[in-house]
Image (cartoon, rainbow, N blue to C red; front, side, top):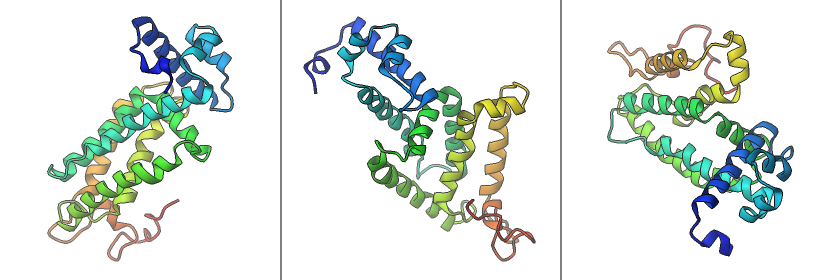
Length: 233
């Protein structure tokens, strides 16, 4: 760590550092890592390039600082899933938190998507380490709820993946979504739609043994013609 990073930051230093991170987030989420330059970040921050380099030694350092902050933000909602809570309530709250994050942090979501599309060169070890451990931990909780009959039988990993996909879509494909909706804000309707869909899908088996929607597809007794509906695409 540099001496500059070790010393307590003045108010001006803190403000400049935040301006650089905000400008970097704009640039990286729009143009990706390769399409972003220090000159472009400096212009966005309203600072000179040497001033930017006073706070961060390189473009990589800005990018990595953003990813580090983003990963904590991204992991927190899943970490908050409470094994002692009501299963459907906990999962629906997770869906709501992820959708709210897409509404509040669209640039961060696109930054993460760009990193993944590039092959995750900087966060690969975190994905296969910290993220995998957390997902496995929460998948075990969800599996326990399903085994106890408190929610429909589901593949917990693919349930989590589906929540990610159906919520982050609204950030990563915001332009497409709003174009199709004629410019309308998609989030109010999305919140109700996703809550109702996952609530139905997670409903435990009825007394007659009818499975929840996420388990019916591809299982004996499921709706005719749906044998392949639950397969990954």
